[in-house]
Image 1: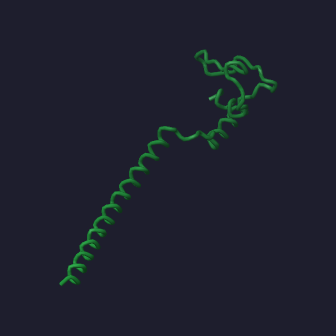
Image 2 (image 1 turned 120 degrees about the vertical axis):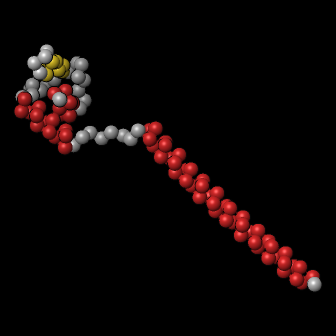
Image 3 (image 1 turned 90 degrees about the horizontal axis):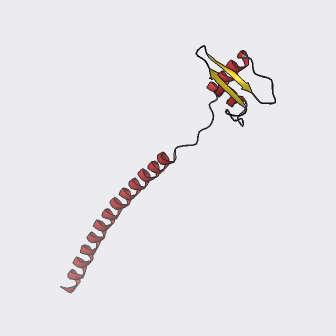
Length: 108
């Protein structure tokens, strides 16, 4: 929780260089602090953690998930076009038959 709270407050920090959080079995603590800011108090860390919980950082959508959604939409569109094509083909065949019967009626 400490590292996440610090990263929330100072998003451009490197948790391996700017600060180091350790846990020696008795809870986590800031073992090293190399930022040009005062070492945060426990109260500040808790406050930042609460803010983080209320305002989680933006995470871009997963690319695989986006591609799956696009593929699903394309499949649906293709199915709709196939149905439309079938309907139009059927209607065209009906028109063709009607024309042929009209031509046949004039020839008699």
